[in-house]
Length: 243
Image 1 (cartoon, rainbow, N blue to C red):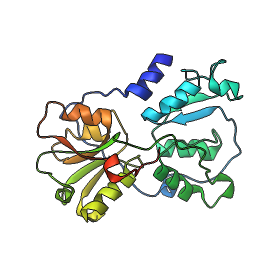
Image 2 (spheres, helix red, strand yellow; image 1 turned 90 degrees about the vertical axis):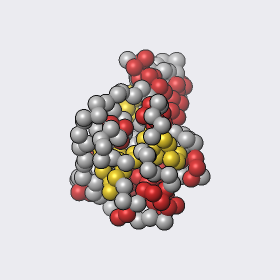
Image 3 (cartoon, one colour; image 1 turned 60 degrees about the vertical axis):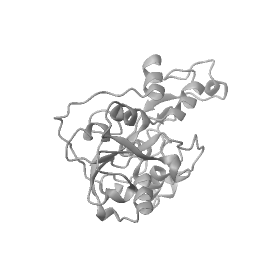
Image 4 (cartoon, one colour; image 1 turned 180 degrees about the horizontal axis):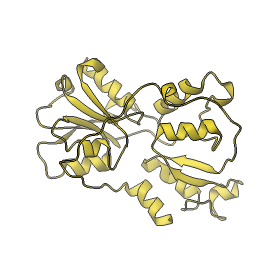
């Protein structure tokens, strides 16, 4: 379990997908249409979520390089006892947070804002930011196919992005920088950040022109294909993602 967890969080291994796989889109609506806010008392404090991001290696290290807090770890020395859980889904994390399964939520700052909007009416559920682990300095990318030379060329194109994912504000800034509105592009909201049902797998569909991806997926998809390239990454937008 230890090696599997480290490999998932640090190496961020990618999987190749068939070009024939159909893109499955999901409904992107406000979270209150998907989650009932009925706060319950915290049932336990051991479940600590992580996301697919290199900075979460800090959490793994502090936990003793294992999913369960080890006795000689930094967390244990401060009387913490955690079970680390990989969860890139804002919906799943929000449900666990609201239901009291965990008092913790791990996400980018814009994802925390989504949670805050959802639960704000219940003062006991309003999130408090405890720590910022990092800035994105190239770990998030907009990958494009041939024919897109600049941000303005996105007009009329079809873009794949994870619904409620870490790149929603990135999309907003890209459109703002290009002088475009969200109505100027066609968005395919996919369910996952990586693996099946992600922008990476959707990119193999001929109807998809661009996709927001984490760096391992971006590097894998542009390798050996001169018609595909990274158009822009986060650090070019001046620290626009807090992780």
